[in-house]
Image (cartoon, rainbow, N blue to C red):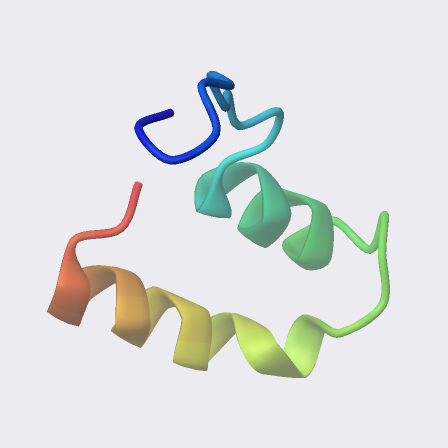
Length: 45
């Protein structure tokens, strides 16, 4: 916002992506453990 004066809102969260991967909605289930580890380490929501 500060640089361009445009507010940014996320439309999905890392949890949404993990859920979609785990449920087979999108391919890439093999990445879920690494994503969960990242979330645990860095606290991403």
